[in-house]
Image (tube, rainbow, N blue to C red; front, side, top):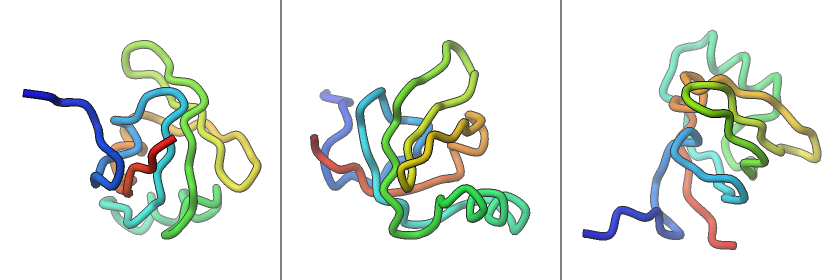
Length: 86
């Protein structure tokens, strides 16, 4: 069975590899997480590209609105979106 991610598939930000991009669709955590993500520009419809993945459970470095942002792995699990093809 092929477990690779495919364009158009609903995925979490944490599941992406370096160079992959998604369109944010929704956040699965409560108001505190949503407020934090909104302050970083991570809102519904935003394009988010993974620039770097830390080893193990470290943060992701992502590009959103021409800015680089570090997102903890747990918070990245809360961001659900549609995978775009490169």
